[in-house]
Length: 595
Image 1 (cartoon, one colour):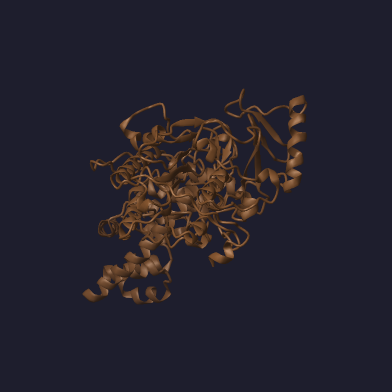
Image 2 (cartoon, helix red, strand yellow):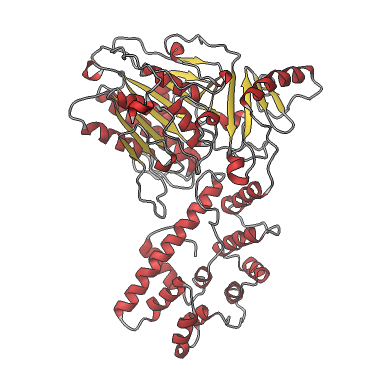
């Protein structure tokens, strides 16, 4: 496979680096730490707090790129660019869904493996899985994890532990190329613990602290094992998860600096006696350039771009001295194919040239970021500078056949907004605006918060007789028992139970009935076990669906989740069944169930 992949590429012999910290007196190793959502503004090198000690070591011992941009806010696409040195429009991985890296594209991992490096990829969770095709060239591609309520990703500490355990397996030291992907920042509502075991508050900042502590532990390990100096280490954000108030688009579609300017640090390998390299590079670079640089570390030529202005730049020169060797007025391209993934609309493309940002919408937007740091005041079309820039960049857009983005319809954008209103607000104080799906979401939120007046109103609107019954009972009023056979199986006349059981087709309620009124202990135990499995699977799908919306629909999961409340969700709110709901929750030991 590797002979095929290397056809056309002249692999030079790697210059051996000597020094007591270069294992086996051989080639420097390479480690990439790619972090979902680690933007340029996530942390500062100006401070020196214990909370960001893991990041501070990169501030102190590496080259910091202050104007680094991702080629795409879609992390699957960005990682493909890191591994190929190509833009998404060239390597073909443009979203986090069905796109995958085809075997005809050469990856850095394949070059490393051909040069007898050990190769490893560890994924921390969504949206990076083996189906992306990113596994080519990796001896081990570890994306296997047990997903369950409250366990949706691998924390940074676990990802790094898998990496260090893998290192320890090799009896004879050998150079390695390892790629680790951290998913933590997508889960601000999951609690974390610090090194002392203290539970942090649920927030994005807490997850950032978790990553910082884990990085600090990783650095200590590498230094203890005398691997730190002899390893090229890349710490890179893949995108930003923050949506600015001034922008109407979700982070998956935002091409302004707030969405695509990422943290990027490169600590080059060095001999122990060499001085520590520590400076900043303030010129525009792309993560595509990092891919090309890694090819150079393996003395290989990176794949060629389809058009010249998309060619990546080798960053090796600024790892030796801080002055860039490339044209500082070069074009840096970013795209988001999220519109096509969601609603079959062409990708949105942005081009940066020096201080100017050009967004290729139906009506192009041009920002002078030197005078408009927040990128809220586009230049006017009658401005001579606008005409000059538009004319210049349009030439390159034509070469690369980058179409103008026509905009999107409202469904996906509005669903994200409504989802965040429902699941991030502490107070339930809004009402649905007419969409049936939104109404189901609001109904679920009202049921969860026990807002019985709202449950009653929305259930009547949806003609949900079970919801009307439960809400009315909880408001202390009389309500006739619904004719639904599943409800009557639980609450109706025992003499007719078998008839109701025959007519009821709800698996959860059938098993609940067996648990409550089974004739034998074995029957009751079986009912509870099956009910537990059904409820756990449903709760997991619901939670993953909610988190997908809170992450701006970045994951390749079905958008049919989350759904509205099921009949058993309503019935568990009745006082007669509430003890069974509490028992089930207690045994499953999960705070993520909301029936």
